Amino acid sequence: MTDQTIGHRTAPDGYRAIAAALVHQIAAGDLVPGTRLPPVREAAARWGVNVNTVQRAYAHLAAQGLVEARPGRGTRVAPAAAQAAAGARAARLHVLVGEALSGALALGYRPPEIAAAFTAQLARWQAARQRRDDRAPASGRPRGVRLAGSHDLCLEVLVGQLRAARPRWPVYWRPSSSLAGLFALATDACDLAGTHLLDAATGEYNAPFVERLLPGEPVLLVTVAEREQGLLVAPGNPAGVREVRDLARRGVRFVNRPRGSGTRLLCDQLLAAAGVSPSTVNGYDREAPTHLAVAAAVAAGTADVGLGIRAAAQAAGLDFVPLARERYELALRAARQDRPGVAAVLAALRTPAFRAAAGILGGYDPTQAGSIRRVG
Image 1: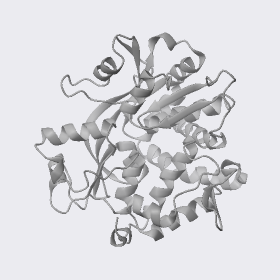
Image 2: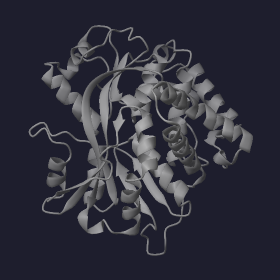
Image 3: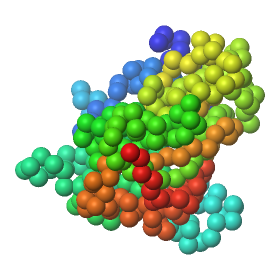
């Protein structure tokens, strides 16, 4: 990426979207204490923003005690990121949940639902206190539960609630893609895999892919939530992107999700249905690792549109053009549903606290959370 691209003018609040994406990674344990963040120029090229935006994002995190900069060592996740002063931590949480709470009140949510959502957000932040290097027992098998697969904000809430409820009970989660999650399940590298893969031939989510990757093996698909996928655009939709065909319009800059992700598969299917060749989409090969990263690129002004979930658009203050409703599920081997760690996840999905928190994220319908269907 050229210096000219790095120096592209960025939206004034673009740094907040980048900081929010990094905060989510810290809270989820993907950036552990001591992890060095990319140098400013390298990060600017990766995110497609100017260096000042990255510097502001890093400074914003440093002010909250989440990262620290030392001469010769770069910017690293603070050793005690979540052990900052109680007042600063409370203020940080207030900022994170403030917009969601205000939006919930404006939309008519009841106080008990809002209180549940606030509790869920607090649980996510408490997850930042759990080191990623929790020791496994001598047998080598983790004491808790291993999750893999597609990134999802609703699943982040669930993981946060589990970690808060049982702080000494490890929950290992490293988001990747839906296909990578199912491969991990097939090779016994995880206990549950998050997936939202639409099979074009049958119009069914997830089951056809499970049958191909784990043939002849009984697998359970557990609903986390149904969610909205669509186009993330800047407030007011200045690029005028209203349908998939607009992605091929001259001057429109797109940001995509990685190959193997359910959202990338959906993108390809929507383009094919609209008669649009990927080669005509400016930015088709530009990949963002998570829905929040897509939102950050649009919020920073380095992309006009990306495909992602409504919750990511809402978190970054973007507008949203709905395109599809999909089912996000956890896949697990049927023989393991009664294991303590797996059973705890299934039980948590059915709690009012989870459903209230999921419902307030935006674009999620957790009505069927915890429902199970069998494949194979």
